[in-house]
Amino acid sequence: MAKARSRPTAARSPDTKPVLLSGGNPQIAKGHGDAPVQAYIAALPGWKSEVARRLDQLIVQAIPNVQKAVKWNSPFYGMEGEGWFLGIHCFAKYIKVAFFRGLSLDPVPPVESKSRDTRYVHIHEEDRLDEERFVSWVKQASRLPGERM
Image 1 (cartoon, rainbow, N blue to C red):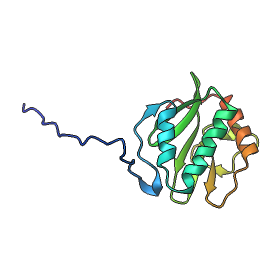
Image 2 (image 1 turned 180 degrees about the vertical axis):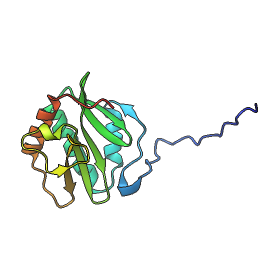
Image 3 (image 1 turned 90 degrees about the vertical axis):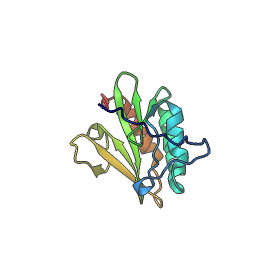
Image 4 (image 1 turned 60 degrees about the horizontal axis):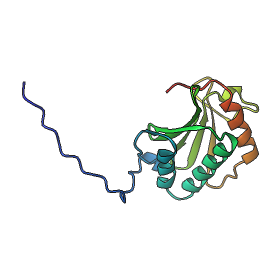
């Protein structure tokens, strides 16, 4: 059996910006902790970076011991040993916040999902985030069993 040749990979310079995928969602390497989430936020185009930064701040203020990771080019937030309760993803015209147990929140977030329990909040450029309600959802979601991903 012939040996497979390995292809040289181009080293990514620290100054190289992440590739933006469809909708402007940045391609960020999978990783746990705050650093990959901050890299994701910094790589978002335009107004989306500012909104994602504020979402991250609100989540951390509400749940100081929140766990963070980037998986599948999206930030996830969860509780240690309990799984993930929230994810963020960037689309062309909005940011989607997924509450994985959203059907159990009061009030239920407005956008339905194909998944029975998941509910979404879509944030468009012209929208004003109801921070009080968002923080309430985050606190409620953090107390529910999370998703194992």
